[in-house]
Image (tube, rainbow, N blue to C red):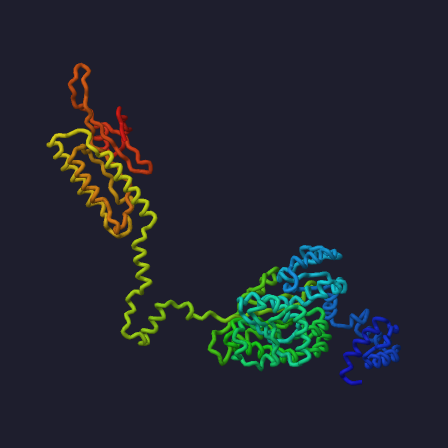
Length: 603
């Protein structure tokens, strides 16, 4: 018997042992003649084979034939029987709400997590929002549903959905994607569904057979995927400067790997078109070192080639291996070597673009990798996202560029110190626009001036001598104000502590009005000057002389009691009266006394 039939013999022998060599029903239209031939040979040696298996169990101290297998393979098989089913939604044919509604009509109930699974239940995946999870024992029933027969829901390993989702997170609206390895057509369709059908394309390498190309186009048409373009060349033979690929911004790299992190390697290898020769190694629970090195070298070659595409901004590298030689080592070696023959920015590791749902994922993200360990709910998955480093020239200002050009002598006769038109406009705008605080202070000053004008109207005609004295004292106050409050100074506003508090006694007279008119002109800032921040001050107005009527006669006299009106600046702008004695005490002790109330106050 040839070596090519060894795998078939092993599988059929296992099947016969499970059935205890009982005869099976043979269809009259059995198409494979070699299967019948092998089965006849095995059945003819049934007794000898049973005795040989018994001796083998005794030798390995195994209770059954399953215990002859390595422990890793037994655990793998146990996980495979309980591993839930993952299906992604074809949103080109059905929305998430429509799928939920259809499942509810079929008697399914949505639950929060896999741990809550019942007879007919499902849940949403935590990493991919368009992926549903079903119990494994429902597979045959699910395949009969209209959702699956019309390609609205499609079964696929979760690791491929994670890779596709990672690519989607890096894409802009009109970017193209290059899938380096043919793999499963389901991966190509899922990538197409997540992209814009009108403006983006999915390029796939390695479709060499015309029959295979026609088959794929028919499948994609049924799934309504219109933006997939098939390429005949292998990925490593494609020219990075190919004009068709100039819009490609992300490359999805799914290289062949040992697949030791997959619970059901046979099904995975058949669906993803992996290397069938790995089954011999996987049956031993490990991969030979020379085979592992060969896989790692091919993976590094493909990753290095992906980094040579100058227009590409990111590469997503995904495997189902548990060996660091195929995962971290390949990525680190590629980054250390760099992309040769290109002037583009070098690559760096990017943090995972997928949500982190458990502690182990958070720990692996510290190394900028996304990892899923083999478990009862998922197969192994390793994802590395490589993105180009930011070009430092993009963040350099115009001034820096001009300075570098001037240093090289490229800007002879051009004065760099001269501000640009934009800068001049900004400066003019800054001068015209006053701060909000300064505007509020201007309003307050105008209210103060209005109050002074209203209060300073002469009520009694004074003598010329007294007017001269008052004019002199008032001029002194005005000069003091000029020296203490510089109105046209453009520096920062003065602090409150730097403004003095004024307390002067003045008399109301016609000349007083002229003095205050001059003072108002001095205080009034021009439109182009900055309004300074002033502290509210206390002003004691001149005494008011009221006519005094003697009850014994009609002769009017000037009352000897003078009342001083005090105006205190503040939010309310209030005023009160002070007696002469209180005013003197105020000047001496600089403390406010209780105000006296005048019999005839006015505003």
